[in-house]
Image (cartoon, rainbow, N blue to C red; front, side, top):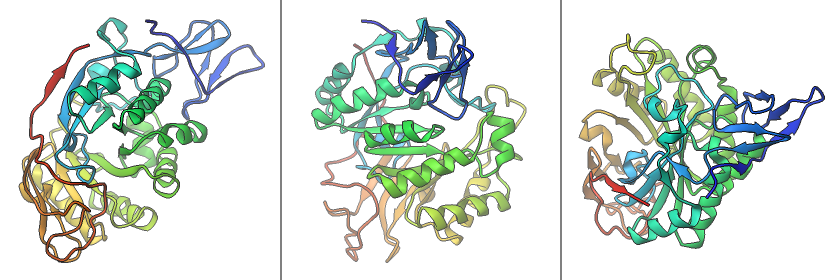
Length: 355
């Protein structure tokens, strides 16, 4: 097994450097130099992916943990990531993985076919590329998605969606669902706190919604004093309704002090509830809160008759009131998402898987 693999999306420059064309960072590399993501490297006259077939670990989670509330609720998902990230968020909640510069941390080794087989053996409905951003290991994720599809397994991307058009088209053509981390609706926030830009993320959201069959949910981590003002939340939600539609699920999650933003307090529940109220006033039908305990705000309600259709306590489903076609039992209104016969929830378990 090798952990270097020919990478796609790059070209040679006239000055002898190689430019990576995966994402808007457009890293220009000399011999042996790595991109900002750390896992894409120039070796000789080509670029390689240094994390192919290697992972920071595999776990079986409830699908609601991704978070995806409208994608086969109650099912289990085999989750894994590698190392590195193409954004530099000062508030990263998974910094020990996404900011890792030590490949010996990637102790789990598995080729795409092994991962698909493991998902089948453990009864998982899907495989999730998560923990760090899967766009930086696009080749590994796409090959794994192809292997999963052959085995009848769905694939999920948990991503900040920061990538160029060509890579975007390939990546999302192989994904069945995605949760996009929309970090803010402020260009200044993306520039100062993430070392990135907002517009490519908005372009990706539009592409997923308008040109793919990939199920889309969105998460915004609310950070006190940084992106939690009423005005910003309102502008974010207004854009979602206008450009993506009122039935795209939105998750507001709580920040905890971490990485380089330890001087900011944790997000209070009241902030998340206030944001949720604003989002619903703007017309969004499905708005949830995360990283806190709030059953009411984690419950899915029928957009027509307002009945509680899926009641959640953390990741535990307490009540499920949809038929196998995903329609409300009370009024038969179809719920936006991907549903099938409900056979009981996976619950709050987290099971390690070893290869």
